[in-house]
Structure formats: C-alpha cells, structure tokens
Image (tube, rainbow, N blue to C red; front, side):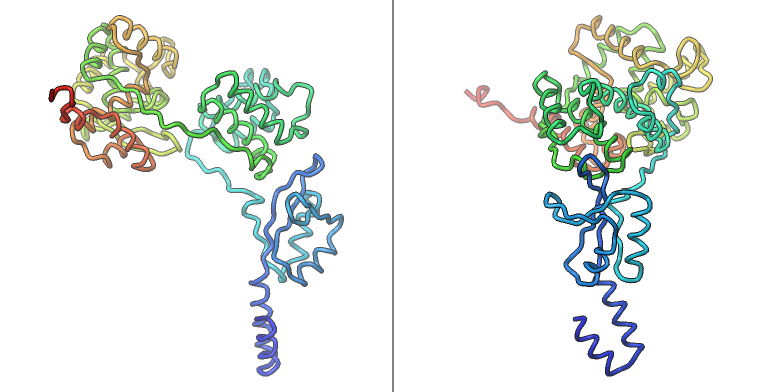
Amino acid sequence: MIRIITRISQFYGYSYFKFSQKIAMSTRRITLKNLFIDNQRQIGLQFYPDRTIQNLVKTLPGVKWSEEFSMVYLQNTPTNLDLIFKTFSGKAWIDGGSFFGKKFKSNNPKLNIKPEKKAHSKCPPEFLQKLEVDRYAAKTAEIYIHYFEKFMVHFTGKKLLEINEQDILNYIQSLVNIGKSDAQVNQALNAIKFYYEKVLGLPNRFYSINRPRKQDSLPKVISQMEVKKLLEVIPNLKHRCVVEVLYSAGIRHDELLELKLEDIDSKRMVIRVNKGKHGKDRLTLLSTTLLENLREYYKKYKPREYLFEGQKGGKYSTSSVRNLIKNAVKKAGIRHVTPHILRHSFATHLLEANTDLRYIQMLLGHKSTTTTEVYTHVATRHISQIKSPLDRL
C-alpha cells in the first residue's frame, strides 16, 4: 500500500507525498506494556514488524529483547518514557492505554484512614495513600488492608518486588487448603493485584493467575412468616426499625448505616440510597408501616444526622446491627438470618408477588438483570403450583 501511494505521489507532486506520510504513520502503532523483568520495572514496546520503527527502536538506550513476552523493552524511567514519545513523534502512534491504566473514578466520599490505623498498619504508605487518593469505599479499603497485611506476614523477610507469580500461586493455594471460601480468596487476590497493578503500576504483573471458579450457589432466604416472627420478638422500637428497613427496602448493611434523615422521602414514599455499591445512587421502597414506625422512633430517639445513630452520636455500628439480629433470631427460634439474607428475602418475596424482574433489579441496584435472575431459582411461586408425583399415587 505504501509503495502504491509513493508512486502516485511522484505523479501528483509534493502535497500527495505529505498525505502518504500521514497514511504511513496511521498504519504504525506501538503499544506500551508494563513489564517486570530481573526484579525491575520495564517498558515493553509491542508493534508489528516495520523497518522505520525497528530502526528507531535501535536508537533507544539499553533496548533488549524478551523471549518471555515476545517484545523489546527498556528500563522504566521517566527519562526513557519521555524519550520514547519524542523518538516516535510524527512517525508512529503510541498507544499507552494499558500502560498508564484507567483512572479510578468514584463518587464515594473520601476515605479518611485514621492516623492510628496508618501507624499500626503493615501496609506500605503508598498502599494507604492510593486508597485515599482514588477514594475507595471505606469497606473496600478495610478489606484490602486486612488481606494485604496477611499477605505481607506470609512473606515476612522477602521484599515485595521479589515475590513472583509462582509465589502468589502457592499463597492462593494455601488459602484454599486451609478452607478459605471463594469470596475470601478473591478478596485476597484483589488486594494483591491492587498493590502491584494500581500502586506500582504493573497491570500485567500477575495476569496469568486464575481466580477460583465461581460456584452457582443459591441465595439464602427466609419466609414471610419467619420475617413476621422475627419482628414480633423485638420489643425495642429502634431495633425493630433497623430490621424493617433492611427487609422492606432491600438495602445492604453498609447502605443502612449511611442513611441520613433527609434520605427518607415521605412525600414520594421512597428511600434514597446515596453512593451505594459502585458509587451509584438509587431509590428504593418506603413501606407505609415502616414510615409510621420511623415517625415514632424519631420522636423517641431524636437522631440528629444519621437515621440510626449510636449512643454517643455518629453512625450506628456494624456489630450493633448484627448482634440485635442474632438475639432476635434466637428468641424467634427461626433459621440463621443476616442483613444480606433479609435483602435476599426482600427480592424473593417481591418476585413471588409477581413484581417485574426489572423493577427488582432497579430497587436492588444491580447492574444487570442477570444478577437479579438468581432469585427466580429460589422463588416458590411456580414450584408450589407443581404437583409432586408422590401426591398423584
């Protein structure tokens, strides 16, 4: 193609020759890759064979060939990175998308890691700083810190940059062997990848490590009768309102703790969930029964900012919610219940009442109906209509 354009340019003159140069540049593309070779960060250059690019690559200082990654590379320094852009300016298109990575965007409130937490944390300072700068949700940050500290303890005496893929694989296998759940293994891997990929900027550091195969487990739910028994044994008005919000609105545990007084919209009969999972806002149901109880609760407890507050003010604690539900379950004599089981039950009971799956998806804050469809497997609306062969005998 280039030869044809060159011949045409000889016939039509200089202007067409300039056009051919632009065409040639558009066909040349260099993709930058983050590599980690010989315990050092390297810049990988991936491109289709091209004489112009190959000749220019030879002018770069300390360029080497990697058999493992099948590309040339040079040491990752600001000087070399700047030199690459200058060398190929006007000659080839530099694709730095995977090299620089996508900036994490979130509307979550800024994470403020307590000074004492920073002082006692085993995590590198830049690990904590990245969590704050990128505004990771407090719960996510807490999980990452916990699992990365465990990871560092496991490799005590070994520098983090000396840990290779096989070391990581062995570590993940050890978690599986001691009985850690798939969710816990995935959280540990997320924390590890966060450090190497986000903090150190090495997106392909452990790209070949596979996650545990996701198991198709059904959500646990309780019946409406069990929900009724649970509420009947809770004499404390505040505690009863907590359980009613979880069940009647189908919100997550963390979302409950973040609810503020202004999030209860009695005129539109909705509850506003601010910065839920993935930093998204949404509206969910405000039960008429719940609204009446919340009005009594407000008169008695007079919360100032958050819907549910501790004795000294501020957000209600996670442990308080779990303990009140645990005690109520024991009194009611029903199956094990958690805040998330109440959320599952909310969705399942709506589905059994013929609510459109798309509305349930919206209320739960799911990205896709595929996630919501799991409740069709536990809803008994259709199953109850099927007669067992035993009953036909």
